Picture 1 (cartoon, rainbow, N blue to C red):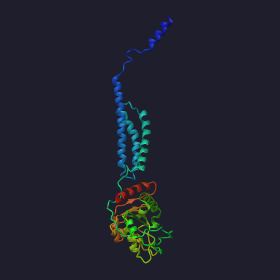
Picture 2: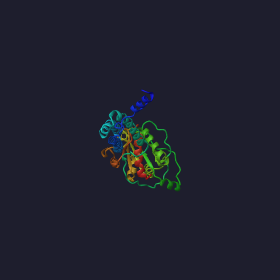
Picture 3: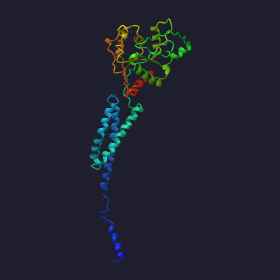
Length: 328
């Protein structure tokens, strides 16, 4: 055999016969449709997950666990669905690694949306009552002195000037928030709540202390006037708020001269919305546990403010409710 004949026979052998080079169009179409069906099902699964996490926002305590369980179930369920939807083209050993990567990414997206936006906020646990303003002009409170052991008195003997009529009119035109609390019961958490509210609404719109009471002024009237200038009152209720006792053993709340009692009575009498903020696992007291003048507090819708890691999430819900009241 000559060299030319050998090369020709070798090249001819490497060319597949015509029957082997025929394209199986139905098989390719079936494979392509299977891939499209798989991608469509994956998109629908992701959309369903987004709807679920929006629903989970209604139960903030269980929300992280529900999302985690859904993501864990998404991996095996998604792999099985893809396998059968694609007639076996999406094998388990191919789809499972991809879904293992997709699930944490979905979890990361949920966390970013939850912490950085308000798209997944649940319904605020704050009542939707219209705020009513009392136009009493008064002196803005001065910084609180260092507390003494036990429940300190809030009276101070330092006289202060009376503001001008223009300043009073300017003050009364603002939406204000008053925070009522007991120092030994919830001073630390109240400080954190105050800081978040100041960050959102401004320092001149949030009050949590009334210390400078002019000489010769009835402190009950003074407290009532300061509360009356506000549109909302936040009653911070801790685990010792109800049972706190004075030196003689009497519950402070049963004393008509108790500052917390006077603040809340002033707000309820003026029909100013009072929102219980429940901290340290406390609950809203029943009307039988409260003085008659405060019994309406039992029926005010409130919100729990839990410690970290839930503190900022609870504060976001509170602020959203306050914005509804104040029209911010």
